[in-house]
Length: 348
Ligand SMILES: Nc1nc2c(ncn2[C@@H]2O[C@H](COP(=O)(O)OP(=O)(O)OP(=O)(O)O)[C@@H](O)[C@H]2O)c(=O)[nH]1
Ligand SMILES: [Mg+2]
Ligand SMILES: [Zn+2]
Image (cartoon, rainbow, N blue to C red):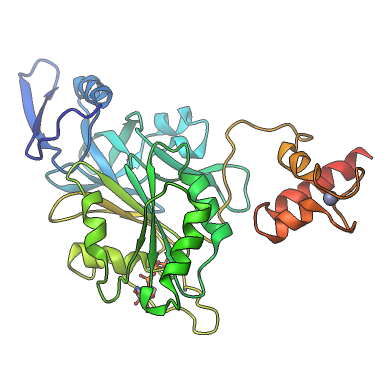
């Protein structure tokens, strides 16, 4: 539950500066952030240990950028925090509310705790068996796609799957309306794979249809932009911030692919309210399955196999194979079929 919808709400967090000293009151404006009651309790506990709350707005190789409401500091994750993390995605990431110990002397500020996330967008790190946090504590995910050569419904479905169960709600933002031959047809096709999900057809470059997205912005809300490279995520960020905060680059002419211009996730606070996170274009999006399936469990493939022409189909080169057809349609990852084949091969 949200504490309050009052934009001007100010939190007073008491913390003991040094043992024996008076209780000092530190005022942290959280107007830009959303806090739950649970997080409020956690903040109170941490502040008793001399820690200060903030939100991670940037994640870099060597440090995090943490916004406190008053200023922005750079901080490192403490050794203790690293030790208790069982997964990489347990470590702090952009969007996280954290408790940190302010820098003393020459040392860096250290992040000692991550507050319970209200939502987490987690994918499978590419090429590795581990989860990767894309953003946390987000309310709305704008799945940005291009109405140019980027248009790909199978990919859109994977993005929807990524948002499903994350705690955030998906909104489809179909950009580059100026390059679409038939926006009505595109909308129809999108609606078929995304029943019930809001769809907005816009033109970021020329500022077309952007007013439709305004209602999603709210002082306590965080929106994250995800999508392939070159779909116009950073162009949108710049429009909403009213300045060139993020670099943008033209897509490759022959295949409409982007050039992976944005390389780091970054949270921005909009002057007129709300937080927004830009992310680098995702290459092959794979979904992270937290419950490890046993090596031999392929329910998805078994279900599809029911429609193969031959009962003993190996989904290899048999005619009328429903599994390979699903791969072709983009409904089943080719990797998934490959690991199925490997597993069967190992058994036989
Ligand atoms: N024609 C057209 N081009 C657009 C539109 N919106 C953005 N672009 C262009 O698309 C190109 C890529 O835009 P970016 O904002 O850099 O894309 P991105 O999604 O941030 O890409 P990455 O950072 O690589 O993930 C730029 O040249 C933009 O000017 C639009 O509505 N129409
Ligand atoms: Mg970008
Ligand atoms: Zn088959």
